[in-house]
Image 1: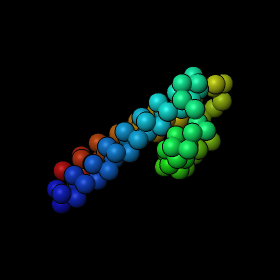
Image 2: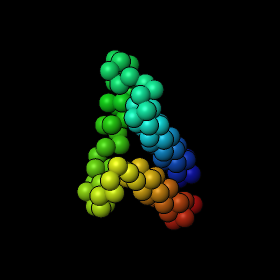
Image 3: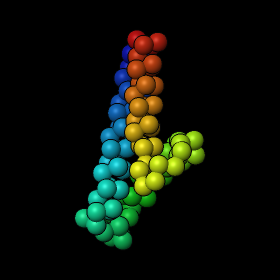
Length: 92
């Protein structure tokens, strides 16, 4: 059971780091530091979008309009951390 718990924890950690990479990439695009039309960058961004947008779109549907500020990645990060802590609390 411990090895399964460690595997799930590793998957959650990878998801969190990919969420951080998604946020940083979106900032780099917003400040025109990277070109989103490059094929490699587009592939990376499409992959990150497919991983994170299904959950973040559900969060965005519930959140009120805050103008240009998108706090859905923060809420998703907090939710994933909460699920990770809940997993360790009940299974460990």
